[in-house]
Image 1 (cartoon, rainbow, N blue to C red):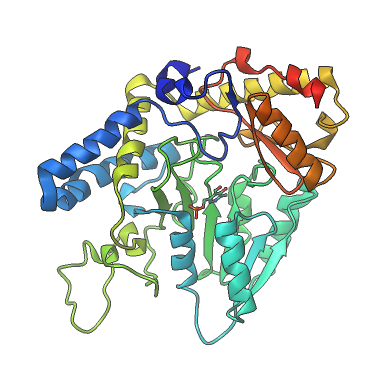
Image 2 (image 1 turned 90 degrees about the horizontal axis):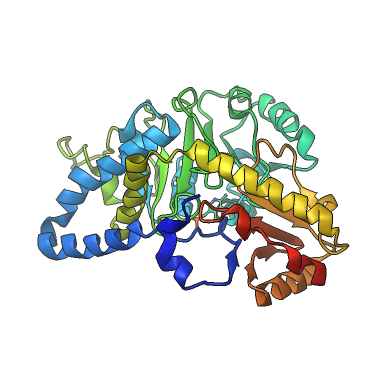
Length: 386
Ligand SMILES: Cc1ncc(COP(=O)(O)O)c(C=O)c1O
């Protein structure tokens, strides 16, 4: 669909099919110029560069993200190098003096899973996990737990990293939580720039976090979190960026926070990733590239992949092993649960030697699809030799 825009990365991987793009997308060519522009702006502006970044680059990126997600107020977006920072900042808002109650799933990415497990071990939180399988009943089971109430935090993914199964009704999951002060956070990393997402009705209630190195294609180092506009939380884990916009207030006695999303910001990080992400979104806007069109292209590729898989009918890899609930509303990769971790690793290694690059975790083999794939690239003949 957009292959001609990825010549730098593709030229280094000729003869290979990169299907690990759900992990890290190749970077489009515009990001190379952006990386160089970052260097040039740093040289030109030296100490003045931070004022320039915050006056020009940050608002421009905030506007793009707000447009992509239909968020009402771009200023409610905070940036950080990774989503783990935001996870920690949210945890640091939980009430003290009691064991905070956290509702989540068994399929959250490690940034949340490992951190929440450690806090539970330390006795800081009580953790309740709803299994995502069976997928067909997941949303109902999660809603039932949420509706019981007494939660301090509810955290779940828009698209699960270990299956690509997508939540159908985000609003129903959010609205099920009866506790007005409960922090509700959606990890949107596998949804952002993959599934068309409209947060206009949820923005007042949820924190939404995602970042640049997957479907947004800007590479690592720039994540964001949308903060509900009325939020007055004061994260205990805080850095000096969180004070921007609050500088006029008295500082001596009390820790003050920006009156917008920046209250969840941290401290100095490398803004070159922000430049790259901005370059991607500027390009999309210039050329009228919409998430919905990319999504339709990926859905077409996924169907072509599954058709070939059915014809090959390999005992090692087949559609009975596919983890899915509703392929019309699914993330941008297909996940297969193989016999065990050793078989999965062997299959992935074999595919790699044949130029088909995937990734795997435990017994799950994942094939990702990207806008730099064409229908003609989806050639699975190699699967008959596994
Ligand atoms: C669902 C999800 N959230 C977050 C991340 C990234 O987390 P971090 O930015 O903390 O490295 C990933 C990476 O694969 C992910 O799959």
